[in-house]
Structures are given as structure tokens and as C-alpha cells.
Image 1 (cartoon, rainbow, N blue to C red):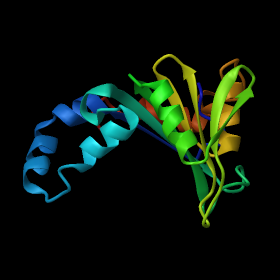
Image 2: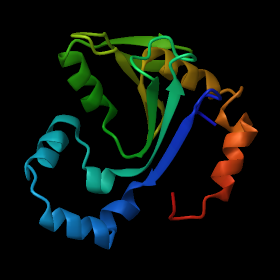
Image 3: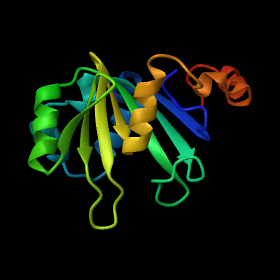
Image 4: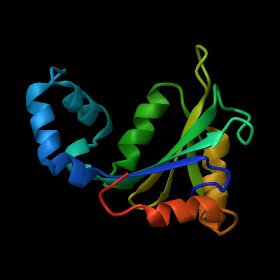
Length: 168
């Protein structure tokens, strides 16, 4: 309901299932990586990826429908879980982000820099955060009250209904 109707790609992940999966455990044990990376992220944001994020929905909106997009499109991520809104907002403000009100939602806006498009985030309701370009986040806030979401795209929703649980 919060994904724009113009989305060309929609993906869903049950983060808890992925983190608990045998495949993830085996990969985690065999792949080299920075063992402190997750801890650094948790220290900065207060988010433990393994336990605090329940699921995510990622949508790609084609550049033709999203003028701020760099490349083929723009991405919006909706994440449900347990987030420390104050800590995340403070971290973004430390890095130059500003806070603005948009239709009753607090948008934390990071300006474009060094060739990267700007990004924003909004806590849409307790436990639900949206991250993406400012225009996409505003359209997501607009969809909270109804409107043409991806759920009104019959062709895409038909494909979603055809996907069996656990398969992509």
C-alpha cells in the first residue's frame, strides 16, 4: 500500500527467516568478512540487523517516473522492526541532514553530495521506516492516506500472487 504504483520492481525479504536460515549460517561461517562491521552499524544506529529488522520491502521506480533518480531508477526501502528513531535522526543530523515536516511526518533529509543523490527517511508509524529519495519518501507519506499504490497495478500484483511463500 505504501509503494508507488509506478514501481517496476518490488522485492520482499523476511529478515528474521534469512538470519535464522541454515544457508545464512553456513555462508556466515565460510565467507570472509569484517566481523566488526555489524557491530559498528549497531553502535551508530542502534539497529541489530539480526534481531531488530523483521522484514523489508524494496521497490525500484523507473527514472521516467522519478526525476531525481540517478541511472535507471530510484529505490525506496520500507523496513519494519524496532528502531531507535532519536538515535538514527541524531546520526543523520551529525552528518548534515535536516529535519522537516511533511503532512505530519518527520522527514530527515540528507542533501545530495559528491555526485550521490540526496536521500531521506521518514518514520511512517512506530516500527516502520521508509528510506529513499525525498520525492519517493514524500509519495510514500502521501500513500498513507490512500491513493494509487502498487496494489492498484493489476499486472504486478498478479505476479506477486503467483509467487509461493519462500520462493522468489
